[in-house]
Amino acid sequence: MPNPHDETLAFYRDNAATYAGRERKPPTERLAAFIDRLPPGAAVLDLGCGGGHDSLILLEHGLDVTACDGSAELAREAEARVGRKVEVVRFQEIDWQARFDGIWAEASLLHVPRAELADVLTRIRQALRPGGFVQASFKAGSSEGHDRFGRYFNYPSAAWLRDCFEKAGWSNVEISEADGGGYDGEPTRWLHVTAIHAG
Image 1: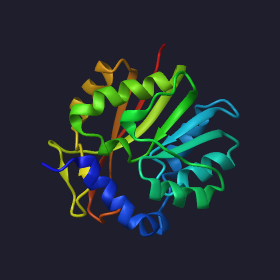
Image 2 (image 1 turned 45 degrees about the vertical axis):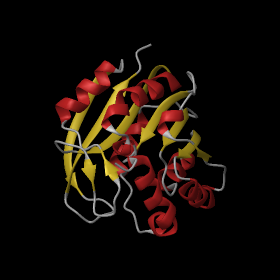
Image 3 (image 1 turned 60 degrees about the vertical axis):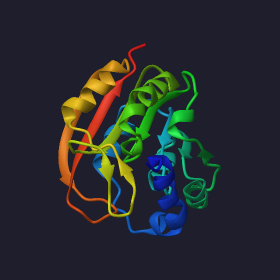
Image 4 (image 1 turned 120 degrees about the vertical axis):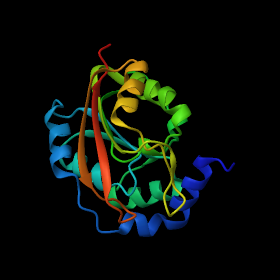
């Protein structure tokens, strides 16, 4: 069976300019809620920043932003947009310790294979300072699979996802659901998660 990382990264490698340059409506309300929870100048990680659209908004609000993506090609596109270095880091390689006040993971952790998600969630929790929080979004479903572009998605249910976060040591896990869309143009049920690293 092909490695889901390889298939997904191949899509972003081959389509980086198109993906990063598309017209994208920012998640304004959720970004505002994320920013409102942070102290001025807080250190934040834009995890899986894609084309850097959200990083730019976070920077415009005076936050100390570290942007990263698992795709070197997307990272270069994001660098061109935000005018600063974007790190190339895969989720399974995260090793920051108590560095950030908040982590913004918009439509990124949904690419982590189900069997690896608990470990990745532990890694990002450890990257937060005590009291820090993550805001993440996933495409809802009942079993992992691929979209028509060959990208892997973990497609969790809300109950499965909550259990995964709690097993990884997160506190105050809150999940809301909303209908929307995505790059594939398909109707999508989204799960929006906030959770705290209680220390």
